[in-house]
Amino acid sequence: QLQLQESGPGLVKPSQTLSLTCTVSGGSINSVSYFWTWIRQVPGKGLEWLGFVFYRGNTSYNPSLKDRLTMSVDTSKHQFYLKLASVTAADTAVYYCARFCSGGNCLVGGVRSWGQGTLVSVSS
Amino acid sequence: DIQLTQSPSSLSASLGDSVTITCQASQDIRNYLNWYQQKPGKAPNLLIYDSSNLETGVPSRFSGSGSGTDFTFTISGLQPEDFATYYCQHYDNLPSITFGQGTRLEIK
Image (tube, rainbow over all chains, first blue to last red; front, side):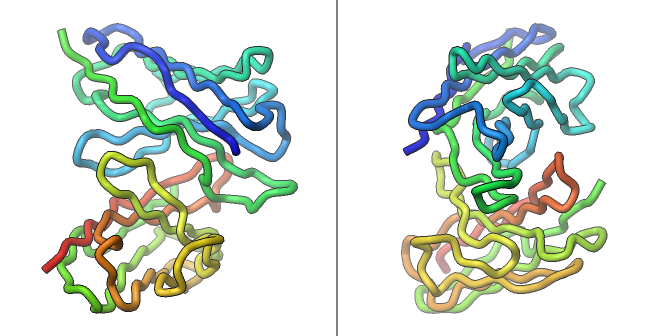
């Protein structure tokens, strides 16, 4: 059973960079069938897709955040990463890492595996 | 970018009722539309994929329909565990996806 686990600081100061790690277990991160993704949720608000990273390192970002986002992957560590620069209080949210099927031997289009989410607060 | 307009934003209903949520896309997304349920403090859970296909293990009281720009999600015979927030999500523009704003379903 695939498991994803977010980790990283729960508190980040304004203007600094938010950095999170997602560790993948119970399945391969080296799959052509999946995009690894970050999705966030401001408390009391809806879901916001941040971006995808493919195991080869290709990325696709939400246009509204692309200037501040960097996603990467380290297949040897079974981890992928999120960096969000120049954070403000508006970036306070629960951040989820997840797996999205992009084709091949899975049902395309849905997010079926999620981490439990980690709350990151932006405050001085 | 393709926008999804989900309505209503909140809804009150009683046990046993049937409820319908709509999701309208700003342009044709074929049937590339999914529905999720999210309970407080939990990650979302995929219920319906490709507009009308029930995810394995999801009760048959949940259903979805639609194609193009207009989609509906229905729960027939509300159970206590169904009171949650529901989101639509499209993937017609890979490699990007978008979620609707969500519908909070509350007990009347």
